[in-house]
Image (cartoon, rainbow, N blue to C red):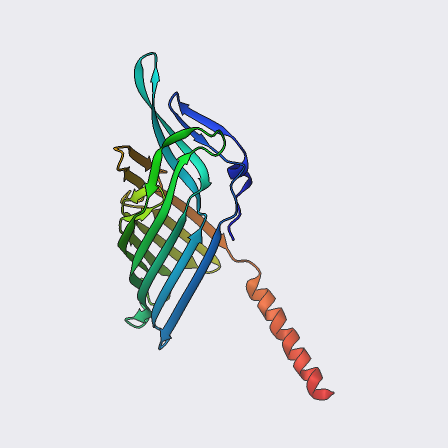
Length: 266
């Protein structure tokens, strides 16, 4: 079960422009989720994952539009209504490998697969006000490719320098709001271990490609476009000192040895 959060139930209306607003809904009910997954591992390195998920009464924002006259001028109102919206199915098949190469200089986790989405929902009324809009229908299907790889490259024999290269790609797919365009991200990291110190630099979304774009065309001629750019490119620098761990381990070893001696002499 996925229960709506407080902010989704809080009946707040956010007016963006005169004809554009978002509306939360105190009548949103819990969404049911049914998930089945089968995983097979071969030689602790190769794996196959099959998954099927069914979502009923999906909690989402639905874009509703309507035309109206204002002082003999035709205007278009666009409202994003938080509500339960039909059912959704997701089916995926993934194959992958998790292994080390070149005398453990390279450790990789790579998987690739196919995901199939089925959406079935319709709405034309704001449940909080009763305002009727044009009918919004999303009876769509899509099949997309998913790729993800996480790689760690050891740069020296002493195991003190490490380079991380992580990448994911999700092909365009149909979701509740319309067609979600492809997403991808390349993340890099560099780590140095020195005595009890660890120095690390991480750069996320190097290519600036992790931007959400959703496009939807309705049979009525209504069009909706969403671009959500949270500027995920970022850099973090961290310095970590591991203090006391060796001393604690030494004390624990002494205590274990002492307990072993006591057990033998009993």
